[in-house]
Image (cartoon, rainbow, N blue to C red; front, top):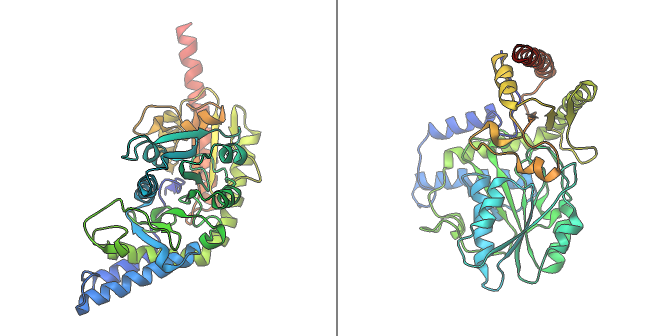
Length: 383
């Protein structure tokens, strides 16, 4: 039996989403842009999914622009805001934003775009006053993540959004790690743009949305058709979006109880870390999401820990990207001023149980003990 504790990367698809997709695919499939029966059936399914996603995030149905995921939604927000007017070529963001936000902000495909980065505290929380102070008359867009993807720090989104609206500056909220974990209400928040990832809360991979405030028109990133009310060209992936809608409905009904379970499991891990030698849990209450725990492990590279846990049937991730494709320290942990090379990210979700945490803690103790013993043996042999 395996324990999957990497929900912040991707969460298993909920069975309701799989069932909805299979049901849709077993019937007649048409282009939702056509007026024949098959097309109108597809259109009805697509709009039902749109309503369900809108209900989950507290938005109007017409504000939901379906995308292939949060990365596309973020890129579309950056492109649209930076090309909307020639007078605004300045973008403000924090140093702990997701790489999709950082890279899209720096590559907005128009000349003269300037990015301003602001720092964070040692707990990974953005200084709202510093971010607000970085806004200029020519600022085209302000980015703020709702929940940090590595440490789980909850950011002061409401304060930043309120100031941006008062200043007439567009603001984009990256809600990829917030939807399904916190109360998300786009209308009450008052943001202009919000990116959503379907596979983070149990929807199918390759699904997501850019939520666009009613009345805001931005140049589209993808051209070639009038789909999504001319805001995103290309035939929609209806079957997967039907699955996304089903996952959204289940999540809207269950996220509070799931978050309560995650908080209890999260605190078990943090309590274990507080009692362990050479381990620190980053972040601090009350600015913590329910589902992410980032552990710093003194003097221990993450790769052997990840491999040792995987051999014991436990899937986690490293807060440092050196355990994935890029051999670089974590920009998030660097911005916090902590060890950016040696960390583990444990993330909980709708499948997580006490048994998973039991296996994790037992596995961590065993793996770390073995690695410390191996290091001591190698040190003795070399001396």
